[in-house]
Image 1 (cartoon, rainbow, N blue to C red):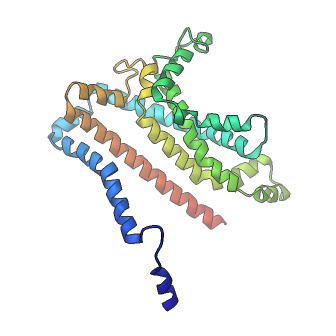
Image 2 (image 1 turned 180 degrees about the vertical axis):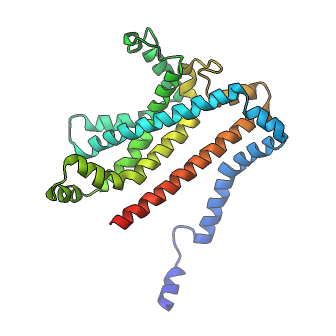
Image 3 (image 1 turned 45 degrees about the horizontal axis):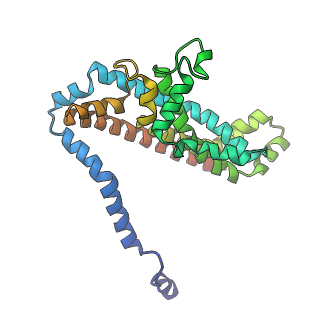
Length: 279
């Protein structure tokens, strides 16, 4: 006991727990809590009927449907193809593998405005890809979805990839020895282990898509009631000096995002408990 206390009292290069915890709370408060609190405080200047009116006009509701719907569908598609990309990068060797691995991070490094202009040029009716399609992509809700898929893919790949690298192939070999088909091995052995990582990647891609602005406004067309996203509507209200209305819409987005992230965290905890129970 005396030895353990002596070891705990030894000086460390890193600050002690009390100091580290205090610095962490202070930093998070200044960077996260204070700005979010300011949004709520500004919204509280509205009465309840005014708040309901500000966040439930037909134009605002249309932006909610587009933003949340396109973000959800984009994150869902990225979960499927992000898993495939991560699987290929981890399990196979092929020429220019490092280049492909670097390309996954391109949406991280590319300025969002550049991404939006490039996507608009490619998918426009006279673009290199859009000219071959019988329907419009740019300046439609479909263009919003394309942009959100582009910016969300790296979150899924980089979340799933480390888990796949740590996944022992002996589990798959054992399943094959017991007579499982490849699909059964993936469904019953691999996917249960990857479920928490897939949920995390989905949550990150979904949250990132909800707040995306730069790459979307160029390809969306920004037509009210059709292809106008909620972040653009917030900017529009700020330009009209309707600060309370802008923060009211922002609060709705914050609460919805928080509920979504809380739900994902609960699902992750359930998946981990289930995985531990099976093991």
